[in-house]
Image 1 (cartoon, rainbow, N blue to C red):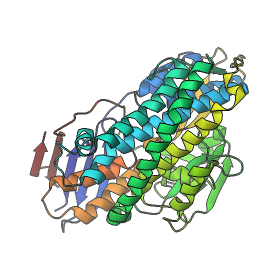
Image 2 (cartoon, rainbow, N blue to C red):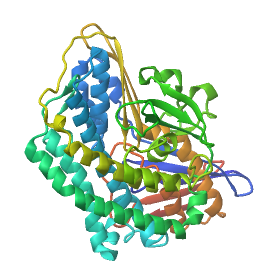
Image 3 (cartoon, rainbow, N blue to C red):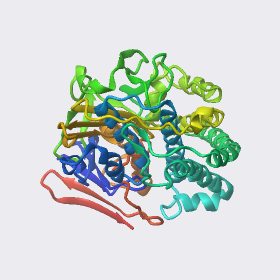
Length: 474
C-alpha cells in the first residue's frame, strides 16, 4: 500500500509550506512534493491600478526582498514608457540591488542555513538556530549580523528606509546619493570584506566534511537560467537571458527579456499555489531549470571583478561542466557577496554616482512592458499590460522560488531516498529534508517564524487516507 509522509510547516524559510514524501508499496520513496499553501493574489488585485504605482505596491509582496520587486517593477515601467533612464539612475539602481544581494545572502547563510552545517544536523531544534550560532561563536554571529546590516544601510542611504523604500520609479530614481552617504558606505567596506573572507574560509572547510551532503542534497542534471552581459559576464540588473545545461553548454543565449515568454512556459499543479515555470522548447517537466546564485555562476563566464573571479574558478572546478549540487548554493551566495562588495567599492570612486540627473519622463509608448532583474533568489520577471491611460489590464509575476519549484521537489525526493526508512521519522531526518529546501532560500511571502522549538507536524498517511503515524514537535 502506498504511503505519504507530510512535513508541515517547513521551518527556517520565508513563508509557510509543507512537504509530502510519497512511499511505494515496498516502503521506498517514490516522489516528493513541495506545497505552498499561502495565496496572496497580487497579480489580480493590481489590475486597474496605474502602472506608476506598481514599484510601491509590488514591493509589499515581500519584507525580505522588497528591493527586488521595486526594481523589476520600475524596469517594467521603463519599458512601457520606452525610455532609457539616465546613466546615474542605472548605477544607483544597481548599487541598491548590490546592497540587497549582500543583506539577503548574509541572512540566508548566517541565520537560516549555517545552524545546520555548523552546529550539526543532530543538534536539538531549540539550539539549531541563530541563537545557537551566537552561543557557539559569538564573533561569527555578530559579524554575520553586521554584514547583513551593511547591505541594509546601503538601501536606507539611497531610499531613506531599509524596508519598502519608495525610491525607484519608472524612468529612474527619486533622489541621488549624497557625499555623506557615499562616505558611510566606503568606511564600512573593509569590515564587510573581512567578514566575507571568514565566511568563505569557513564554508570551504565545511565542504571537506560534508561531501555526502554535496552528493545528495539536490545533485542532479537540470538547466540553469540567469542574466549575463553580452560578453558572458555576471549580471544582476541588466543584460539578457542565458540558458545552459548540466554539461555547461549554452542552449539559448542573449534572449531579450521582453520576449521571455518565447522560452519560458508556466505549469500549474493543484497541490500548490506556486507555479512551475519550465524551459518551453523542452516542455513540462523535461524543461526543469534552476535560478539563483548557483545558476548565475553556472551561466556566466566571469564575475568581472578580481577577487570574485578567483573564487569563481574554484567554484567551477566542483562540477563537470555545470556545478549541479544544490548544497553549493551556499558557496555561490558567498561568491556573490564578494562580487557585490567589489562592485560597490568601484561605484564609490565613480564621480557620476553623485549626479542629480536621475529621471527620464514620457507617456505610454508601449502597451506591454517587462522588467527583469536578478533578485538574490533568482531571476525575477514583472510583466505588465496597460491601456492607453496606463491602467493595468494584466499582470504576470514570475518569481525565483516558482522557477525552482520543480528542482525543490526533486531535491526533497533525492534526500528522502537516502534517509527515509519505514515509518520512522526521526528529527535529524526532517532537518535534512528541510535543508534541501533551504539551499534554495525560498521566499514564499516573507512572514515571521518561530525561534527555539520549531513547530513541525509529520504524518504518515495510507492510501485510504488513514493516519499510520504522526510526529508533532513545538
